[in-house]
Amino acid sequence: MKHSTSVTLAVNGERHELTIDNRTTLLDALREHLHLTGTKKGCDHGQCGACTVIVDGRRLNACLTLAVMHDNDDITTIEGLGQPGSLHAMQAAFVKHDGFQCGYCTPGQICSSVAALEEIKADIPSHVTGDLTQPPLLTAAEVRERMSGNICRCGAYANILEAIADVAGFKP
Image 1 (cartoon, rainbow, N blue to C red):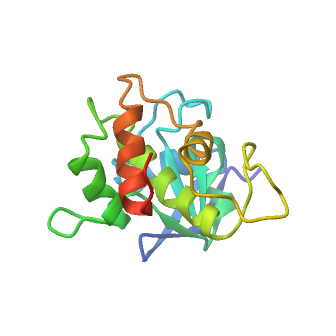
Image 2 (cartoon, helix red, strand yellow):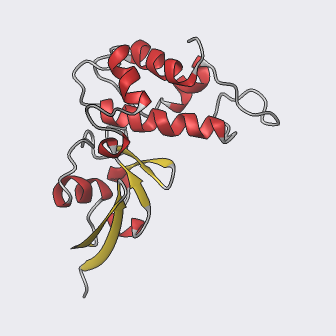
């Protein structure tokens, strides 16, 4: 019985050929095989959002999906958004607005917020979108709903919302 598979992971614009156990999560492939440790393992059950990455433009809990399911998908981790000296606008806004305390959830929060704003731009409704015949409005309630899968044990939610609002151009 075959227990490993060759997979090509396109991570942060770089292709990586791996032979991995079929049961390896995308999170473990990123952290253990590619040594991209910015993506955090929090609950390992999809409940906290610390492992959020962007796959083909959509946010995804990397602990809930197998790496073999993402052969040739475009994967962006926190390391791929920006680096010191060349931060992504959302990373810079998190620093500016103190959108973190211990920082453990921050990579997932930032990846999620970048993708959430893209969802709004693409007119994808959420559970709080008032009128499904109209594009979702960029409001604090809309952002809070979209970010509800990302938990911050330190409670930096107000500052996280301010950072997202700064990038998106609305008042929370």
